[in-house]
View (cartoon, rainbow, N blue to C red):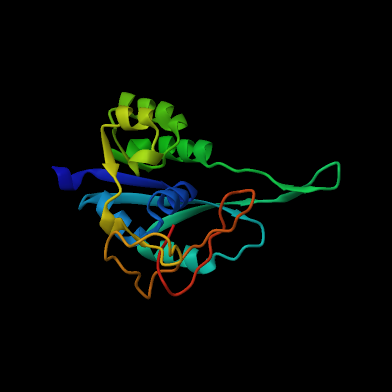
Length: 207
């Protein structure tokens, strides 16, 4: 039965952040997002993969994700001093870590829900399908690699109810009436070498 499917959800938070910001000028509502992709099935584990700069406090955001049912994997990037005295921040990716985690859990799952857009995950999807595991890729159509959409058993586009308008983007008119709620912390972006900084306030789970 559909309801008995064991589901694992794996979310690349930085990918979701930039996709929502650039494509709809919105923020992901992680609570509704998780409910939507699980779709009444048996959730075994939901894991959110986060990349952040050293010293940035994201505790409110992390606490909210945990409250919504996510396990967290956090990678902290360190500032390095170059030989010429300049500073640089190493770029980080969870692609390998996510793939290893998913394969390690695969024997306990009937369905893997991958919330990421990188075409490098094509090899992972092929390996999962070879084991008889259903693969579902979730994302925005324009930020999800074509090969991922084609290889997965199903591509699930982000629904309007899974994100809401970022009111800080005044140049973009609202496209739905989803409003943030008081128990959802907000992320905001810092223009730095790793792409995003996630902060929180009283307004909503955003990515």
